[in-house]
Image (cartoon, rainbow, N blue to C red):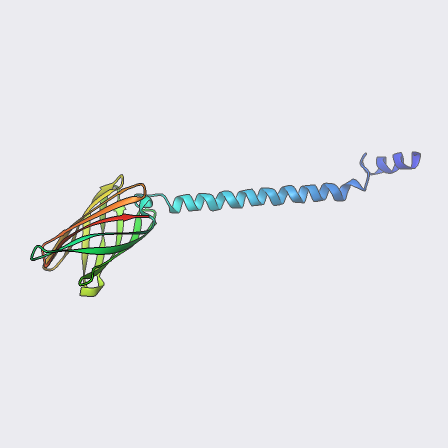
Length: 181
């Protein structure tokens, strides 16, 4: 017994056998702290990536509607949209098709306050141009322009539902589209 007391006294009052256990507990605490910091930083960066004026649009949407041609006739269309927002910038693609008609609209937009600017292209007709407008709170109104073509585009999003209305001054007069996630 005296031998154990002397041993403990030499070790600062602690028995040497406890040191590896304490070291393991300290290592576990450090690992847990590192894991918590890592998860917190990932969660914070994801929330920053999903913030901004376009955050509610993020992801893939699908649905349908009608396209209005220059003679006034309408056709049913099926549509897919994909939005990739990153803060005040967003890349988007809207593809719609009927049995006789198809359009593939892509755009890259930037928001500065409520002002929206960017560029767009329509692949099947090989046209492109600029766009500008205003938006916020789930509603964006822009005008897509190029030589000989202007289109007003209104995009409204509420939860998992979205409507896209296009009105143009060409052989393609417009479209009314309803999308869902």
